[in-house]
Length: 247
Ligand code: PXP
Image 1 (cartoon, protein in one colour):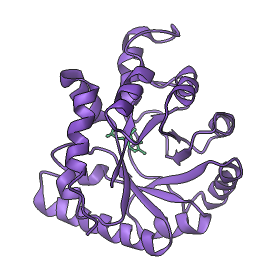
Image 2 (image 1 turned 30 degrees about the horizontal axis):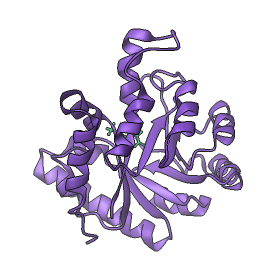
Image 3 (image 1 turned 120 degrees about the horizontal axis):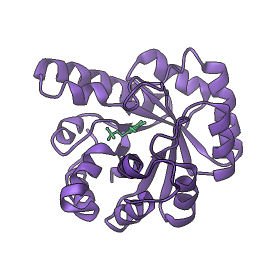
């Protein structure tokens, strides 16, 4: 079955809007993670950004201690965060690009440009028993480089697909790129996750993409949880995900 990783960054975004710098406050991202797990989520994802704009260090340690599923730490390929990850020991890290001014993770990681340093990080993580994923656009060169570097997973960036969703021609073009990328990755021995901008409306179209192992969903789930609660939000998404048949 296609797995769901619930990204709880935006629970922390709401907390930080009121309690920034205070070391406490509501809503609690760990409580949200536990509610997501109880509803059937297969993993929890959190992005410890260098600027700590949402998730804080104490959150990732509490998540590591409390959650029972897999912890996926999204992170920049930056020395401070690498050293935290090696101590924290999440089950998997997803290396993402980070630019201070972006609202969320915008483009994919440039694996080609940073091949040497990513190879070093990949090895450090694997040596510590942590799997490695690269968050990349469905680009042939980036996928080939991810395989060369030895990542276990790629996470295909679905942001453009989500953005273009209401324009049929553009959406189909991006879907074709995602399908080709997933096939290429599979042939190269990479496992394929996907994420960014996914919601109940655009998920069924995404299911044209083969070989998907896990989807990482944040904003739409947290948004929905504000209205119906995390339990209902996760169950609704899992119900749609059950229709995924590997094409
Ligand atoms: N995957 C990665 C690598 C991300 O950086 C993000 C955004 O934090 C997501 C998935 C989730 O995106 P969204 O919040 O749009 O569902």
